[in-house]
Length: 378
Ligand SMILES: C[S@@+](CC[C@H](N)C(=O)[O-])C[C@H]1O[C@@H](n2cnc3c(N)ncnc32)[C@H](O)[C@@H]1O
Image: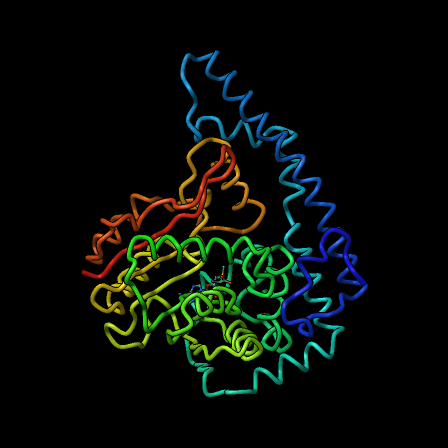
């Protein structure tokens, strides 16, 4: 059974990975499409409303409002309330659809388990690792990263992979359509323009989840040895299975990015994809310090983020960001700023001179492009 308008999201290059969507999954995806469509038209109405409210304020006071001055009035507006109601739980439907599908698709479960048990020596789990509470508690975007029961321990990574595939966010299974994959590739292109002779031999992907970013980066640097780390064993197990399915020799480790056990200077390139917005500032700082320790001389750190999340530039974008905290449990996006990141990078004695800390893909009136949080080891 196919989902109208969504078949391209679900059709994967590994044809046999996820061939059929269940009735339950179909129903949930359908609800998600409806919510997304409703949200899309509301989105433009909200943008117009914000414009009008800002103009009215400016006329009345002679000055443009700041976001803190006008936010309360915006969130009290019925249209924005409706918009937030539509957003709440929309992502939840996608992950529920993924869960429903995995539960009924025994063939999928078996394939994943078979792949997971192949070349097991590349999967390094550490059951003693202390899972930080900022990862285990928040239920970011309604899909926990850390399993809370046995079924999740086995399949939560797969829920993430399929859910993000449906949304076109990260999974390389839908390489041609994925927003996240394209963003990652555009950063690699940018780095190769800045440093044409840069050929990393060892690469680390921090916060790799189920390997979406790790597989993409491996495909970009096929000659390199690639390692992915995450605190979640369920994510890593699925990542390992998918790498086996793609025939890619990636090494996965259950480690905390702020205090890994790799030796000093172990990597020439360290990346992360959409991880920083989910970290508290104190951890962002520690991760950057850890990157500095792990990089070889001349090595590059490149953390990729959505600009609207980490560095919004106008009132509409700030409203969107705050709404994500309210509707999507993104607790840590509100206190991020380029200035703070620049301070941490300076403290870690990394250089950003070449253009390594900036937005690097086109922005629009509504959304900022990808933000590169980068630095080079001197
Ligand atoms: C948004 S997901 C990353 C998505 C992934 N990079 C991709 O492109 O598919 C964030 C991941 O960061 C992991 N994470 C958060 N804090 C971490 C830490 N201190 N060390 C390692 N992983 C961490 C979470 O467990 C989660 O899997």
